[in-house]
Length: 404
Image 1 (spheres, helix red, strand yellow):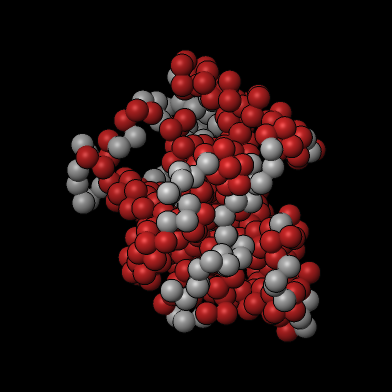
Image 2 (image 1 turned 45 degrees about the horizontal axis):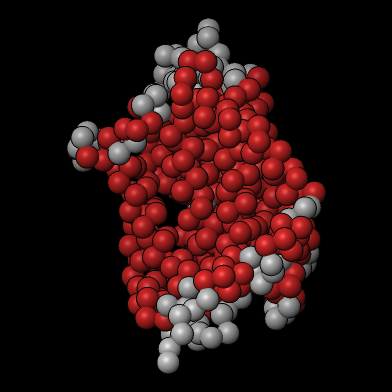
């Protein structure tokens, strides 16, 4: 006689990590969880307030400055830093770099969460958040950049979900679904290269229509190329940075991994990042020469621009090259952190600091905007940790052959 699975046992094993409910609750009393809880206690009521009372009382946005940190950080930065799944998935599935298999699933999960929470963050920026799908179905037109970005976002989230699904169905012990989606992974990657490359560059194209608002040092006809290449750089460096953190936070799941091999592969990513950074740096110089805006370099904005491209592009490119040449793994990981900061700064410069640079009314984020942004990032980190603690993300599931 067949017996139905015990739902209590399933919850205990799959959700509570094999612990009883009191044990699970007790295990969550940690300093990091206390900080996360404090952030959510403050940010969630602010989020609700924003949805109830609108943009006016909760932001410093205006007709002059309609975009703030919710676009600059939650969307532009979030999408750029979520490019790891694109970069590593392409290297693994399309270029046959099977040695990077260990990096694939964490990168895809990070990308999926990055896109989902970027869309979540976009809800706060829209005055009528319930009209989020409007550009996709009402303002239909292939000449619209927003139409392109909206559909690309939706399609790429579906692609990332397809690539992540095998881990989900392994967790649920649904072998047929797992095998089906595992076979789709390579085709999803091919489609994803086209989709992700399109919207990463399209985000830069958004600013092409505002030559009078964006500072001449940041404005260029090459903005779509800059955004695409910097997203690739962000993907490479975010994988290095994220893997460094996860290998410390989830040590028990990584006992099978050879540290020397992991360091060697990390240096391989650093080598690619160095080449991409040097390419990006010289493209920026080419754009500057093409626009003949050298005179702006000797202004306060010029000094800030030089700090960005010299301190956060050229210097890290050299540090990556040095760390690869002399096998300085710690230097490579710290350099990745610097580059991640540089990508964030570039997106904030383009969308906030250097935008409306000559307008008398300057934008400064409202404290509620900051609180909501911190809350969204915290939710994303919690979601990542919850999934990694339960699913085979950092290791191969013992009941499934990873090659099938």
